[in-house]
Image 1: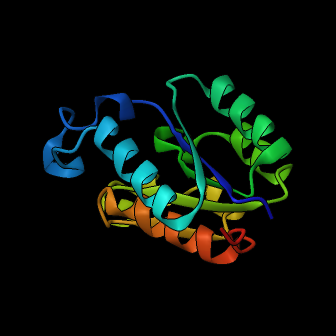
Image 2: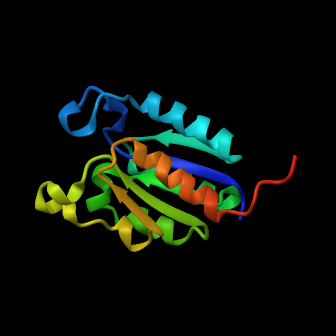
Length: 150
């Protein structure tokens, strides 16, 4: 498998750090991206990082990942509970899929307990804050083909 990971973020994650910091913390999405890129460099994994409030853009990025990525790390945010379309796009991706949630969705409202994405995910991380992204990247890197020798 290719050593490229596409990190996708769904709606409202552009507000990370200012929206409900009691639930999501004070780190911004830019902070998360920096941490993912730094860890990717350490692990020898290329990182593509995207966020959108538009479902179709996330689907387009999943389709594009079919060409050259070995894994997708996705925080679908509210699309977790509503999007069969994202599930179908992920089902068409042959690589690894890891679902990440900053909060523990199982301690929250009942509607947040169901995830369409989990039906395709190779692993689900919830409740570890933004460190969940790094845990998912480490797992993806461990399962992808070894980095070429320098």
